[in-house]
Amino acid sequence: MKETFKRLIPFLKKNLHKILFGIFLIILVDVAQLTIPKVMQITIDKIGARAIDKTGILHISLFLVGLSLVIAGIRYLWRILLIGTSWEIDRDIRQMYYEHLMRLSRNFYNKSHTGDLMAYATNDLRAVRMLIGFGFVVAVDIIFLSISTIFFMVSYNLKLTLMAVAPLPLLSIIIMVFGKKIHFYFSKVQKHFATLSGKVQESISGIRVVKSFVQEEAELEKMSKSAYDYLIENINLVKISQGIFHPFMFLVINLSMMIVLVFGGEYAIVGEISMGAFIAFFQYLGMLVWPMIAVGQIVNMYQRGTASLKRINSIFDVEPEIVDESPDENIKELKGDISVRNLSFRYKEGAPLIFDNISFDLEAGKTLALVGRTGSGKSTLIDLLTRVYNPPRNTIYIDGHEIYNISLENLRHNIVMVPQDIFLFSDSIAGNVSLGRPDATRKEIESIAQKAQVYCDIIQFENGFDTIIGERGVTLSGGQKQRLAISRALLSDPNILILDDALSAVDTKTEKDILDTLIETRKNKTTIIIAHRISSLQHADKIIVLDNAKIAEMGTHEELLAINGIYRDIYEKQQLEEKLEK
Image (spheres, rainbow, N blue to C red):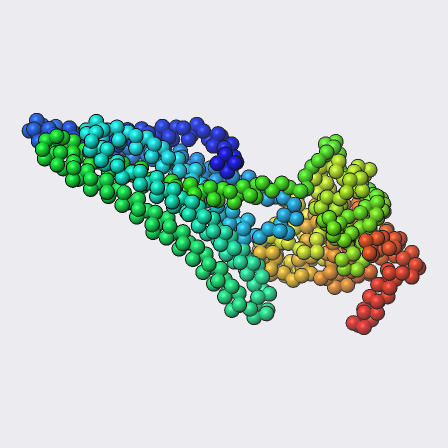
């Protein structure tokens, strides 16, 4: 239990004063409720003895009405305190969960399902919130109200009380039998909900592919299967928690009431207890019904809440692979001088080498181009430079500092990358361009869009830069997406800019115009370009050709053509392709 609740404890401690005061108010309400049957008993006995008049009854009625209003007011306060606090804790856990996801490495997301992560943040956190909020109320009522009610019942008749509570041990048996089953089935429900969420997310994200291959019926069938599985697991849970568990609870309750009605009625007839005491006793038994029902509810909530909490803890227990280890806080701005020394890398033990002892230098303010066949490691080298993956120690240096001595925040603040897979948010065009610089003026945004050769496209939209582009930029062409992403990168004006095949969807002329702008605007800043078209790389100060985990060739465009090797072979083939296209 301690392991399961370990991450809730700090939040509970933080809100302890609210929780304790809320519990105090619940006890106050219970005390007020316990007073009502006693007042009723005294009143009924006085009426039976003709010892009260109409005015006295009126005064007692007004007292009970006032007491009910007080109970209502106090109940409002503890609900605000306890239920409100549970929502605050829910918010804090959700925030912590999201922050934790932001720290996890790409490798985690490669192995995780989006639907699972979404389900943890919705269904599972809701179950935890119910346990924290309503669970406190139920637990306090079970303990205080049960003990107090039984105490009052004993004060009337011990023998009748023992007979009334005799069926209660059955509750323990019911709880033991069904508690674990509820936990098991609720875990399965949450698992199937995660699968269903993932399927919905995947189908909507890939709707264009689904439609282009006319697979609507097939996807609908898969969705129906997932929804049906989720339905079956919910029905299995309801059969246990609502179909069997709760009816058994009410059977025990009704059994107790029947015992009191039979034997208590007899005691009242023979005068062992007064009529007022019999009615009050029955009222107290009615008040005991709530804790008895609440036992079932809290078992249900506890099993659901702990099942969800364990699932959430499984994510919190994942340690980020990429973390600051020994950063030098004095290192702030990076100029962009890059040095790679004897770098060897593979993704995991036993996997083939991506790099085998490669070395090169790039002076700050220069442009480096990376060339190579598909799978030669171009993007992997970029991932190592930005510490998406951890490189071996003492292999990569920036401005003479080993990369591990530079904090992740500082490293990624100074490096901006435009990846192959462009991601745009469901926001305005201006909002997407200014992502790295939210304070940018509209004039700056428009100016940078012109440099990225996308300004003319944007002003043709009905709302111009205020156009909402839809999820992942679904309303834009591939070339427009790439140019917007380049605008976003240029506006940040990083000391190190990386373009990872970020011009593949634009035509040759547009590509040349963008590269000419880059040469002009980034004269004194480091730029790394990955591209398949050699024409994109001719201006680079240094070109590296990767092949078979090695640096096969290195030099300028003219130097590499003179070698008559891999680079020249690629160049001549592309020249021939261009001529054939023309």
